[in-house]
Image (cartoon, rainbow, N blue to C red; front, side):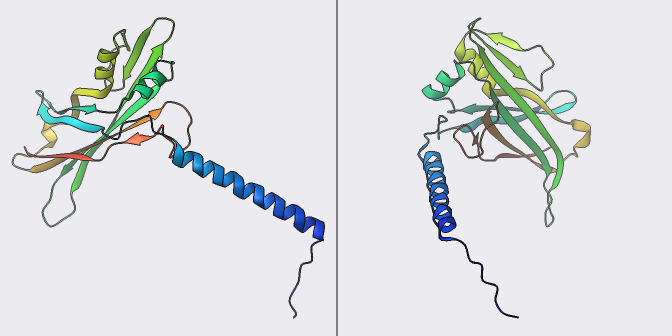
Length: 198
């Protein structure tokens, strides 16, 4: 059986080439915009004050994130655009000569939104059962947004005396709307760990 050769009219080839050039130019412009976009989040962001403690019944964690808000970010929040901060908290039992045993995985979500009419910041923290907090002072609102205190990780009765455990934490910040992955609205920290013997 011979080869099948497709023959297109010259006009089709001309139109096809023009369309292809437009598509290539459009893709190039899109990627240049992504690369040239200036992040509104600081590259100096870090998770600090990570510590483990306990109540009578629960293992608890405290932590804070610093260095995320730039002046541009403050301006964005002051326009009433809601922002979400997600914390991922994992606890492992460390085992020698074997894979670590993941005991618990928890997520905490903090939301902040500025009410332009009332001139106050509304903070919601998923792990607190309280009603949302309405704060007029930006510094206080920022502190509540970036801080976790006495977050329950796991009941103490599930831990074994003398065993080695590792807590791993990371966080992600995003505009609380539909957005394109990779654009400046996305931000995440590295994993931070703390090792302890119970």
